[in-house]
Image 1 (cartoon, rainbow, N blue to C red):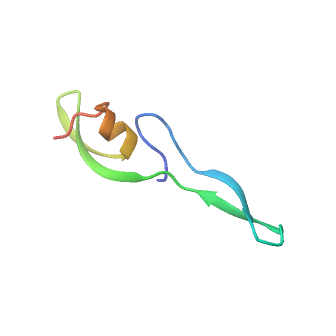
Image 2: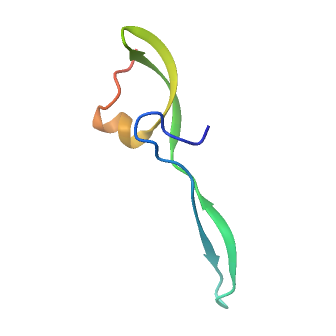
Image 3: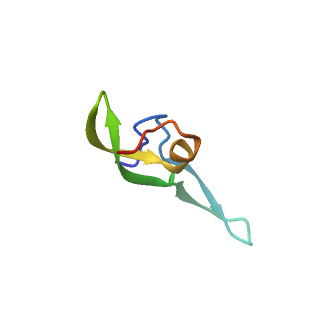
Length: 61
């Protein structure tokens, strides 16, 4: 679910780095919204990142 239906942006992995420089795993999640969009004339519910919404790559229904 944590993937944009338009651009394919998904979860990235990295490290939390503490003050003493010890590392633990973490996730960077994209800002994804459930949106009703027009797809081939029909209304569908898609998961879209906010960058695609803001740039107008999706026509909202």
